[in-house]
Amino acid sequence: MAVFRKPSEAKPERMATLARLPVFLSLGGKRAVLAGGSNAAAWKAELLSAAGAQVDVYADTFSGEMRAVALDPPDGIITLIERAWTPDDLKGAAVAIGACEDDADARMFCDAARAAGVPVNVIDKPAFCDFSFGAIVNRSPLVIGISTDGAAPVFAQAIRAKLEALLPAGFAHWAAAAARWREQLKASDLSFAARRRFWQVFTAYAMTHAGSQPAPSDFERFVAEVKGVGAAVDAGSVTLVGAGPGDPEMLTLRAVRALQSADVILFDDLVSRGVLDFARREARKLLVGKTGFGPSCRQEDINALMVSLAKQGKRVVRLKGGDPLIFGRAGEELDACAAAGIAAEVVPGITAAQGAAASLGLSLTDRKNSRRLQYITGHAKSGQLPDDIDWGALADPVTTTAIYMPVRTLDALVARALAEGLDPRTPAAAIARATRPDQSVVACAIADLPARLAQAPMPGPVLVMIGRALAPTRAARAHAPPAAVAASQARVSMGR
Image (cartoon, rainbow, N blue to C red; front, side):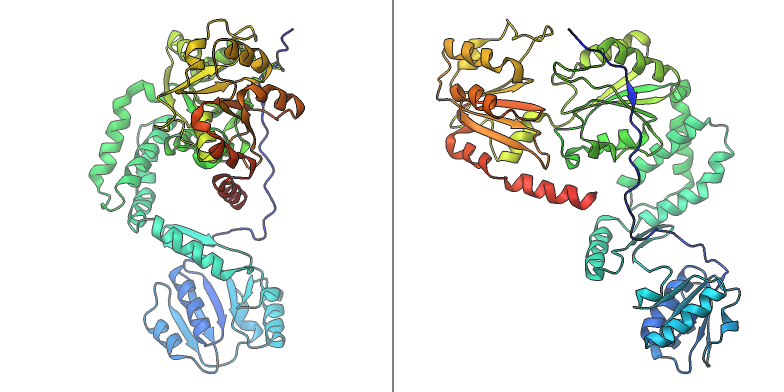
């Protein structure tokens, strides 16, 4: 008997523990106190000035570097005061920075700053710091700070270098244009939804034209493009998005953009929760999962919810594991949108067979062993073995077959395929949770696979692949964690 469940809202996960809270201070026109005249202090004076602070530097002597930066400050004035600091100097300061030689001096400076109610940082002495300076990527007003809580400064600098290479310098111009155009846009007659669409158009253009200078004509063109859409920009929409087989890094850029612009995300059980991390935190996330032979949301309920939300003007993302067009019931959902007059589009994803093959280093169309690749489903709408499988094609020795949702009917499927001529020695593999850190694989001859899975059931989702492309020498890789999976594990753990 089918067990149905209602769509349920997925509560956002609590923020993981932070070693430091990243905060960007507004120091324009505010006073900063810096105790020390060394080269290390000079670098802090330059940072504070670049942020617009009026920097008072107290020291008996000043290095050549400090005098040079004071003569040519990036922004805020740097004043050199040739004497030791006093507690009264800290009153009214926004921040206090100390370049102290020993812990006794550091403690004295730290205590005085805290007594004056001023956040304090003592260079290279974390025990006396209320805040820290991270490695900085400067595309101001786009600014990125990187911190390892002092554990690995060299690592932070390496990450900064990578980000510097990834982010064109021209992003600074586009970020500055965004600041200029924001008030103009608010003063326009565009609706909230249209203004949001403007920023999507702006972002898409800036990402691909970072080297060009933003011009007033760009602003006018973006506004005209949004207005050209007319009332449709205020209407809701549905985007069917492929989440890929599991590894969040297999999302396409287009899928990430869809997730980041969604108001509501309807997602399946097969979607890795790491994928949802790419969505806006404000987006509602509703689980509308279907589990094989378990509690499932009815397809008609999903269709109705999807259409209802879109009619409320929401941007709805229907997020599906793998590719929505491969055994994902995309046709039924697109038909429901069309019948309701809702604009819908599809963002394809990497399907499970591709992800599994990549993680195992297998070519599914190896020219020595395969002339054809086919995807089939292991069960019909009734839950039983489909009665319209082309058994001759499945038994073809030069075909690679990927079987989706195979677990409950695998015994019957293999028995029928063998009776129809499939060689019992044909290599096969069952892959559970392909591309995820906990991926597991059973590789053997197809005739032995049902018994192997019966002895050690695999946690779903499971995919079965059959064909000479999975030759024993290749399938043997499945018994050890493949390099691709190991790399995936490392990437996922770094990002969480």
